[in-house]
Amino acid sequence: MLYLGIETSCDETACAIVEDGRRIVSSRLVSQINLHQQFGGVVPEVAARRHLEAINQLVEEVIGEAGLDLTTNPKSLSGIACTNGPGLIGTLLVGLSCAKALAWSYDVPLLSVDHILAHVCANYIDSDLEPPFVALVVSGGHTQIMHFRSYKEAEILGQTIDDASGEAYDKVARLLGLGYPGGPAIDRTAQSGNAAAFKLPEGVVPGYDFSFSGLKTAVMRLVENQRREHGDLLPLGDIAASFQDAVNRVLFRKTMDAAAKLGLDRIVLAGGVAANSDLRRRFESVSGVKIYRPALSLCTDNAAMVAAAAYYSGQPVDLSASAYSRRY
Ligand code: KG4
Ligand code: ZN
Image (cartoon, rainbow, N blue to C red; front, top):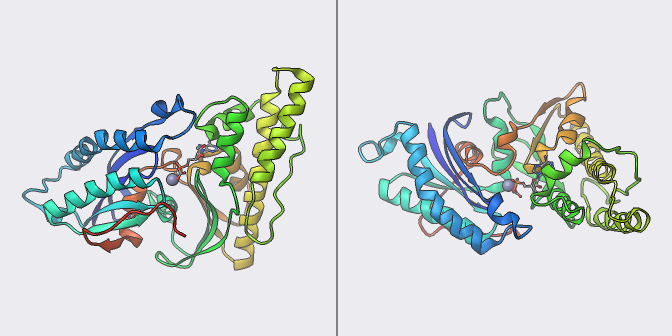
């Protein structure tokens, strides 16, 4: 079964066709990073307009590359799926409108896909992953530990009570003058630093919940103190490595605890922060548990994960379907 997926929840315009939720047939992505860099973050209106300029061509390209002719054989696609939330409402509506137009004009089923579940489904691509498993979803907007009992049943075991982990990476990177997006910049800068250089606090939150806002404030104080001592010659590598260590050790520990408590030996990493080299290394070094993480290009937003999610847990919707920015 072939599904076409569309992703426009934030600053990547993407379209892909995936077979049986596991194999990418064709995929295109246009990143808006360069566009938003000058503002230090994503400007929703600007993002929505750029999605609108890019999406139609991407759709044409993936259909062409897959060798499909929807005019003569619309049934070659089992469905057209689109992220309908959570995300930026204006950008989501661009993708959803495009998906509706395609579904209506070719008379193909329309499906909506949850962005968080889609990030997890990136792990089905080119892999043998099957539920049950524990998933750590770490992105710019979310930080959650989830228990996937089956392809369709997922329970949130814990989540951040304030900033998302990716948001913390982005804010600290801005503080250090490392630019946007902050996660990859911190990851790179930390390579030359000493993670034990500064003792930074983990947010103390019970259970599987997280808090990163206190850590962000602690880094702010540290930077102020360092500036007083060293002027503008900040030990960027050491600060980045110490911050990264504080975020990743709590993500790692709580995820491992959840898997142990549930007696599950499969752990899945998902979302943009799952591209972090230190986080990946921590999980890769454990034995007795099988770790799944997407290829780097499938950690951050993409449409292959949307098409994979359509196959496993897409919700059939009609043309009145709407987008939402937050779940609650
Ligand atoms: O999943 P994603 O593309 O978009 C959302 O759904 O939010 O995640 C983007 C987030 C950003 O906060 C970005 O800084 C972070 O993922 N990120 C990273 C890395 N690559 C991307 N964080 C840490 N290390 C990385 N290598
Ligand atoms: Zn995302």
